[in-house]
Image 1 (cartoon, helix red, strand yellow):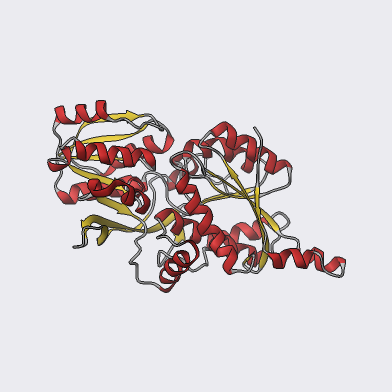
Image 2 (tube, rainbow, N blue to C red):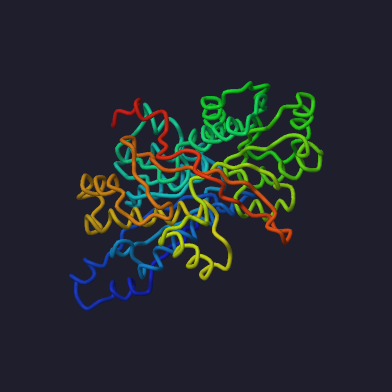
Length: 395
């Protein structure tokens, strides 16, 4: 496989490196950040949103994060764990010790050991596998987005509030999908009529929907991000089941880009989300405006998480003057403080380096003009933490 890395270095940094003396070059040497993500396949738009939001923070800093010049090395994993591991191995060999990116937990499973065993830091902007939250937690692994159970146990709270007594759960058969099902089951108080596991890249759900029709549950909980979720939404609506059965999902199964692509199929969805575009805080308002001006589209929750991740990293780089390896303990401590402006309003880390944050109930509704939008109904879980923190003994 050929690696075609994209390096994002501001012109100001390059000029500094070409300065008149050795001291100038020394102080201006950028910190390399390995950014591995899914930028192709039907899920590629997720990586695109994450990359663009992360780079927005870099651009706003003039090519710097926390006043420290950075070189963001971007690679596409193609949603293939083996590709991602090969990329990570090469980046570690090249001396990179600070990483972010990765959407899917099966890809993280391939990359995490490479980075962490080399003494590097992984600051995840999306993937939040349960193992790193619990027994396999690592002092250099941070998840800025969530732990996988969190978007599903909060969806279980939604199902309980809606009075759903009999449900089917559906998810792809990989780490995040299994975590999602386990999380939902841990909170939901009704009956699980069936558990249906799909393929990660599945596009035809006719067999699964036939099973749902025969069971006739009150609602479905499903976790299918990206193109799979769009196809499922359309097929669910076309089958006529959406007239009788409610759909309850994390926002990652019906993000803004999916909502636009699904047409009317997503109307009536109930979503759990750690972020909403209408959150009333200065950082969120700034982010929405800046992202739209820079990229001429509305950011997804993935973009919001990536922007927060960049600003978290900025706060830690500032604290150590960019010396990630020589001052690793101080860099880790600065990350743990989470002293950065967040689009979520407030954010802190639990002892396992996973978030403590609020989750919201969103409802997909017609805005009166025929356009589907999210209505932020209420907070469904305040200061929510994952269930694995007690199992974490930092390595």
